[in-house]
Amino acid sequence: MTSIREQLIVADKAIVDSVSFIKTVKRSMMKYEDLKKFASTQIPVGAVVGRLPKAEEYHRSGRHREIIGQISSSLIVDVFVYFQNTTVEMMDTEVSEKANELFAALFADSSRNGLCLETTVDIKPDYLYWDPFVAFTVQISHLYIHTTGGI
Image (tube, helix red, strand yellow):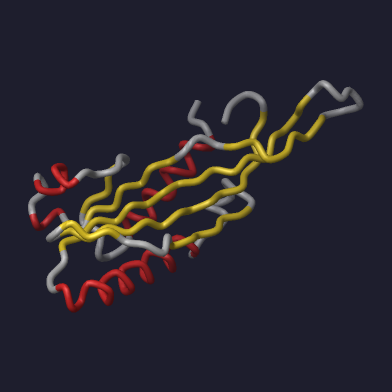
């Protein structure tokens, strides 16, 4: 059985994979050494990394207080985008354009085809630069309901 958590991450990964500027999608963060191993045709890289869910509310079933029927949980999925900077003068513009496209794609189906109740997308305000690579982070938060049978 695949958890709802995993289904949400796979749905986010599919969206990131569909974004036109992203050439490679991975499920782990990259280090500078990892990025140097990619061919230029494989960059930009989108790394989709899910956290573990946090229970927000327990829904009791029936009249017995000790029986929990459903749990509302929040799941954060981070998308780290790594690309090669063409010119320092254009770095901020490139970050803005790429973040804009990714942001719009991630909001296109906020229920992730019915898997969750709500999705919010936040762009982290700081980005990193390790010549010649630039990285920024988009944080996706999902609110979803699951049973005690899994996350």
